[in-house]
Length: 172
Ligand SMILES: [Zn+2]
Ligand SMILES: [Zn+2]
Image (cartoon, rainbow, N blue to C red):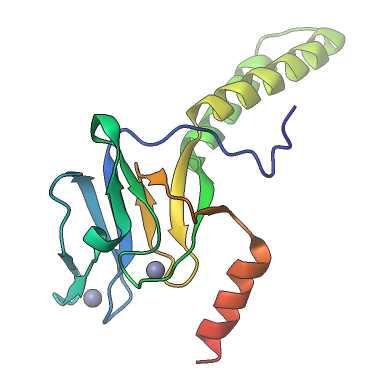
């Protein structure tokens, strides 16, 4: 069995999208449903109206069947993106709450309820695992890229690297 902390599914979002911080005000700008064949070369901030350049051309490799592999950050040029589990947290909480709630009001005896709890925990865990997808996040500017295949230099999330970049940000 794979260790859940490092487990990353081989599953990507169906559509390409990006959430990048504005170069001026740092508001995250969401770009939904990007076209692999016509990726934008900038995004316009919804908060301050400034444009932030994106160098997708330099970082995206088109693979077969229209898939796009991303290596390095189009927003800031940093060479390593980390691969993380992208879990819809709200869905996860809802699933667990509803299933355990249903069990509580089922009127089962305590021993049966305990068995039910264990069974539900397993089902929830499997379901949650099935909906987890990959997201690529830039260590330096924290831009998020979904739907892209991880390129050769993408690495599983590493907390030490992440914190090193956070320290660099706050001491600047
Ligand atoms: Zn802005
Ligand atoms: Zn970046």
